[in-house]
Length: 268
Image 1: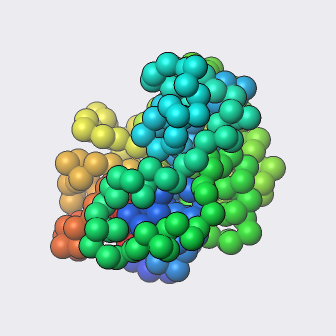
Image 2: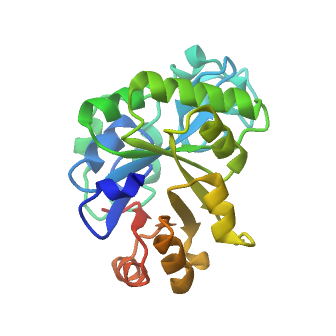
């Protein structure tokens, strides 16, 4: 069964890095807020110096943590891969949201600073913590493996496969990546892992054949790659199309009319 056949609706909404327009992205708070307001959430994984998968989008710590003020002896760009899990656990992962108001939701009053300040400090979570959350909440999610130039691809795939199997969440979590080598390796290691291939600005030649060989459940694309006939062809062959990252309500409707299954969005 295709991962997306689990949804008893034609179209789904996927919370991009959690409900990140009202909570700091890729935090447990953002994922908790997504439940009940979306059909699933998406999150990102990077690896630490001691090879522990943690949930953060960027390959550096600067944008979403207070690393510069905590580790003054370090120098930019503060790559995740240069810090141990113990060091990363010292960092605040939510104060930046209050300071930058990245979606203007504090300024417009959609959320208030009192609400945010009343929340406990958020720290960078390990992958295991989020997999446990997915299991406990019985809520589907999309794990995106961020491309790493520093660790062996097979080592990463083995680690992800092992952690997902151990957490018993293979039915609740699909894995995506722009690095399709990870996806191939995951399928080789465990055929029960569901995968989705990410594309940005270029479409693959002989796309259907390529995706079938990868054995993907879904094709995750930038809106510039949306083509109605291609979406139908893939769907007819058991592959759903999901589009990122769409925040305009009218644009969401338009893409659903094109045959898209799911929309990744920051605004629920």
